[in-house]
Image (cartoon, rainbow, N blue to C red):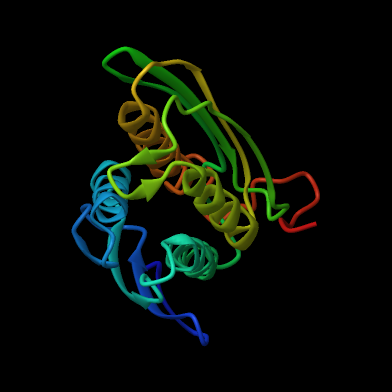
Length: 197
């Protein structure tokens, strides 16, 4: 089984993340941030990655540290669970609609972390959640998972829908990219013979 557990503790947060890449999308999420829990829940469900997140953070200050550090830990867990990445599909892309919104998410599990994020949010907050934290989470995840990730909202008017289409798009792209390619089982999907540099 391709599983991993990451524990991350700082003066600002105490986080434990567990993943099973070959799961069924079971989610057990508790960050103390309602909207963020919703995003992580749908990430698990639509990626079919079993995901447990327990986070305690300095929410009395704001949601930044908890959101970013959860992205760091989840990225590290996915990277660890992938191991040497033998047999994975590696590349995937999806256009994800959410009512009036359409976002494109493309991933390369390359071992070379990079993020391009282009999404404009009409509002500064979704409930109590700062919309700028969506990008912060994607940045933390991509850098620590070691993936090249392009996220772009092509159009949309509702901030909740924009965020949700980005997370659902990542979920569906991850679902394909981490899947074992039955025609290349055991093979590293790179002409270099390795991924990561």
